[in-house]
Image 1 (spheres, rainbow, N blue to C red):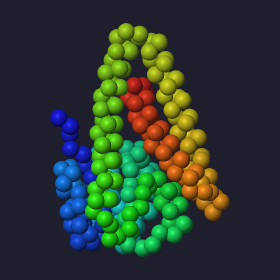
Image 2: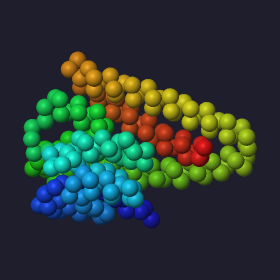
Image 3: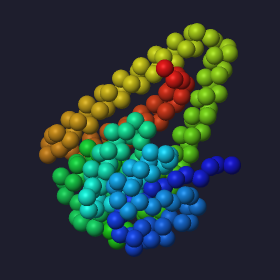
Length: 212
């Protein structure tokens, strides 16, 4: 039986949180509330989340700052973030959001069906990654039993390659953010797709490689 995923809802207004819960309740997942960026970070310390719905405009720590803190933490840096905003999104906001490695923006009032569809995709990806980790552990056991040291060497080589690709992607993201006025949207979308693919590959490779 597939374990329910945790979905973090972050908004300083209770009525907005109620609207999010109403839209997502049919997914039958665990919905966790946070009324501020600080509260969201506390939840993330001990709970694994499939996706975060994050309000942009909040008193104190806003959505962009909260996202930056989330992405700085090793445990939470790969958790997808969907920004929610009642304001029209300008080009600068888009690239500021991209700098925080958010995956999408939704304007309020949002279409419940659109929101539910987007969140469902990330829930399915989260559950798929959990399955991949379990498969990788099984493969790691098989490599240890059947190939011994050569299997460990192969796993180490794969881990090194994955880390290099992640490093190259980080440089490309930084280039996009620094030169956002000269970068076209297809390139941004392409890097986002590559980022997600590399994240899934790294999950498999890291599990296969095991702890240092």
